[in-house]
Length: 232
Ligand SMILES: Nc1ncnc2c1ncn2[C@@H]1O[C@H](COP(=O)(O)OP(=O)(O)OP(=O)(O)O)[C@@H](O)[C@H]1O
Image (cartoon, rainbow, N blue to C red; front, side, top):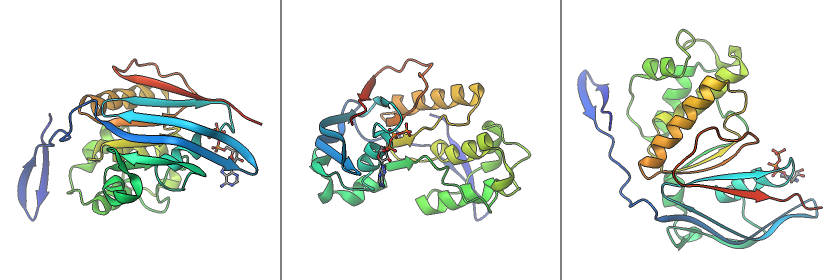
């Protein structure tokens, strides 16, 4: 695993990220009998959902089928209309703070502060997650944003804003990533880079639940697709 060099109070610290302290294959998240009703329409019911460490689950389905609604339920942002969620086999209600601390949810919106620069957004996310400052110039360069670090994000293109938004996946230590349409506005190079990053996260015992209307061009070791049918 690559060491990360960071400077704190003029001292250089070397932090070697530790692999997640869980065996791969552990059942991380289990949704049992999930139901979601919106505007009197049952989007899904009796849905059984599982994601294990090392697994990528793609939620597929037509516009309006309920993919984002399912992700928001899985991210515990809204409660299901029926059914239960379990995190590491414990009722989510009993371990909500542990779950929140191990979850990285990136929704449809980029989630970036448009008045702030890319560097300031990264700095904000790091401090909010308690992660030490590191070389964000290098990270932004890796993400194809060299020279754009210091301008307000509202001046970036849609794809560049999405790259800034996704940058947090490069430093988060959280194991479960829930990502709503992460490839939106990205070019082919960025899509390939993001998928490569997914593969590294999965190899380290991470797990990913995502929606996308695009076929994934990379084959992951453990990959499942859940197709949500559009229900009237
Ligand atoms: N907060 C809400 N209040 C009322 N209706 C909602 C709400 N959220 C979603 N819906 C409705 O639920 C349905 C499913 O929406 P959702 O965003 O989950 O679909 P989706 O499968 O993610 O669609 P897309 O592929 O277009 O992103 C839509 O008909 C939408 O209008």
